[in-house]
Length: 337
Ligand code: ADP
Ligand code: MG
Image (tube, rainbow, N blue to C red; front, side, top):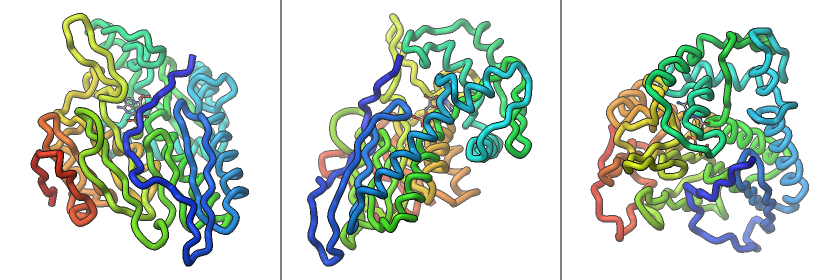
């Protein structure tokens, strides 16, 4: 069964209007459903239709390779190999290597968390709270050191399962961006279920993106940005509540096997690549403010907007001039330096 997510985490504020600007460009969009979410690619240019068609085709190809449920996917083959090595597409091997590196660096992003996700019912939408004993047992099969990549061969230890759900949309977005650029597109906005990937700017000015209010309707503020990937993760997007009112979100802390509870309501990552923004939005959400700040200082290859459970907003240096708070959102904004 397909889970349909309506969440649009980063909202595109300005409506798209066909524009006859100095670039003499037209606007064209393609919309489809892939990777469990709604996708909209909008490009500006002299003749964007063909480029958009190719980008869409590539996106769907990658969905087929990386789906955890499609029996013909690379990931399915890897997950059902019973400890044997499987030869996969080069792009799959590269993305798994990148996921393993990210797991190593962040200690929170964990592409082998899938069996724990399943135990909580997030993969089937039959949510339940597993026992501590069950979680302890499942965690024995979690860990990126249980995955070996050699060239285009991938091998999992018995009982281990791989899932690229927290990175696939970003990586496929990067491929779509590459293909659009290769086909002459200099201005585009890709909305992949709320992951936003931007090519260039819009008619010479930055794109204006609304950052969703995790506590209610509307946005907390506006981010003005060009040529970047902007990805938001939050637990308000997919969660369930038990009979005692406890709320369980779909991002799992691999050190405990329980939904992340780090004091953050949402994390928005801005990076040059979709795959980095996507992986880090998940990783930083689990880290929480303090660890995330430390991690940002050590790496500095991304920027972030953190919204705490108490509503406060924390921005890294590079976004200070790019983010403006909505006047209706009356919480404090802090700089991370
Ligand atoms: P979404 O794709 O729902 O917008 P994310 O990019 O944050 O949000 O990814 C969440 C997905 O990542 C989950 O649905 C699950 O498949 C997977 N996931 C959950 N916890 C982790 C984790 N610690 N590391 C990597 N992937 C995770
Ligand atoms: Mg992610």
